[in-house]
Image (cartoon, rainbow, N blue to C red; front, side, top):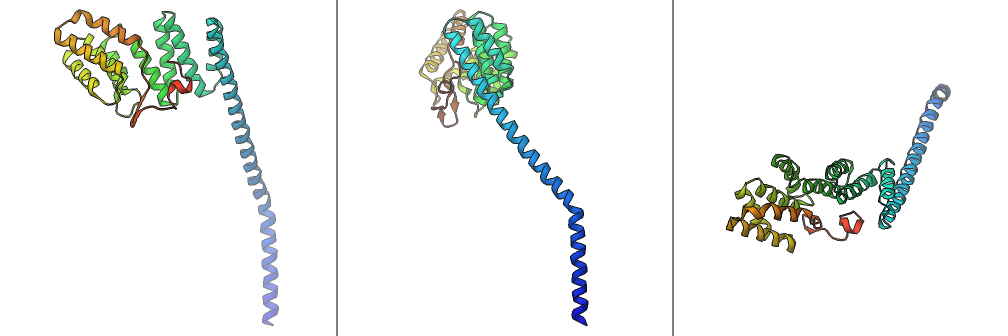
Length: 253
């Protein structure tokens, strides 16, 4: 008799499990369908993102080709296409290049605006800081010292890629603002620090000589001359940036 009761209980359990499975099946299928839709959506978005980046890359290269052939207007228009493409990495690069074009045309205000936009649009800290440095250098002999200090001081922090060029620009800004003691300290540091380029050391030594001689009249000229020089490769914590630097990546200097 015991065996009979156990067999009946087993049958009842089986029927209950079947009933539960039938009730749960629509939910299971719904979850599976949702997962499939999510996977397909991710694949589609990823493919779309890659396609968009490829298109932006082609357009950017076409812009550089147009510029090399003297078609500045055409190059600028193509760069605007890249900016509007939504490809985040290329947006910052295109804005950087447009800023350089405007600077070459003597339109400093427009160049600064474009470089500021490039800094905001760039997820790459090297590209972003290069844009910020270019903006500050373009404003070196016109902007108030407080503005320059606010732009340059964050760039001089230890792990920032352009900390030495930013320190040099800040030293010149201090010198032109009459903050001779702070400027002297900066230039002394730049003349000795590991990682400074030969040109940077020479300018630091020349500035120190001007400070020592009291030749204040030559200081603005020296500062402007330094501002026109292209910034050296970024300085990483271990030293100058190697093959992955902006020049190797095609980032305009």
